[in-house]
View: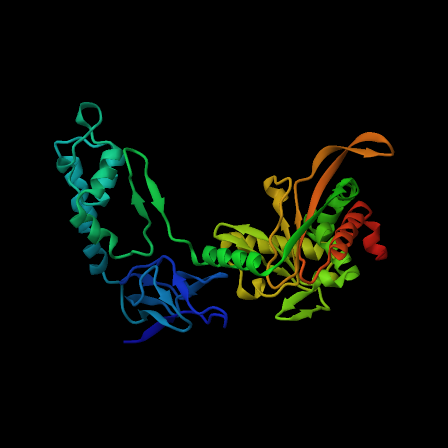
Length: 404
């Protein structure tokens, strides 16, 4: 018998262990080579584990929700075997027996209630219905699940980590308790660490986005035709940030113990929302990138975040970050520094607002900028002047070309 081991991919040095998500195959199932068997969640990324060979998934050693480490064997594949029909048959009786019991019962259960009772292997005869004509409601079925402890315990036992606990304090008011994912737990840890270790202060300014909007409207079609990428606003914000970081290098620095580390390069983290939580992929050497390069890379990272395809390399490093709450409609916020960086720019929704120019009230598309910085190494002067430099670059984009 030719047996191939399915192993956990090599994790980074900073990741001690990871969590298995849901197996996509059962023991006894046929698998194709390179078919994804399971996903593994670390505190930074989600990794896919493909089948090393075609064959039968003969054994699953670690169940969904289990903790694993690098190179650990989690399953075995028999490349010589054929699919085993016995495995699916063994799992079938439970739902097949439970479902008829609810249907054939003298008590009539509503469809949603019948489904819940079938899943918990509870006969409708044993449940008192509170609905019209004695019908069993969803609330009755949920409440019944809390009563027979001997039945509920075996159901919950096989996957304690994967299945949420549903509690029904009264009537039809369920509560769902779900453990934090490893990524969400890590995000929480880093945010608390940032607020506990940094002297965070935020300075604000407003920017008239009309020059950028006019430039974008004028060139967006030819830009997309020339570069194969849409011209958005983020590339302008990124370029304006780098413009300011060059003028005030302390904004691009980081703290290491009692030392200030000045970085001679510009790696900008772009905060991206994903189904699993906030991630910050890195645009490297942004000062050497064109607007088209930036837009393409941001689009690529957005797609990878949605699909859970970001790698550890994508998320490692960074000297400065940008958070765009404007895409969700945020008017103003105070972004939290991403350690060990010393500053982060928050940008928001651009809205038409009344402003005063030359003694006259006029309508302009305004955006509020927020720069949070670590006051341990950055003084208010550098923070304010750095934000003003970003504002000036956005209100007069020609400064980016002239580097003034």
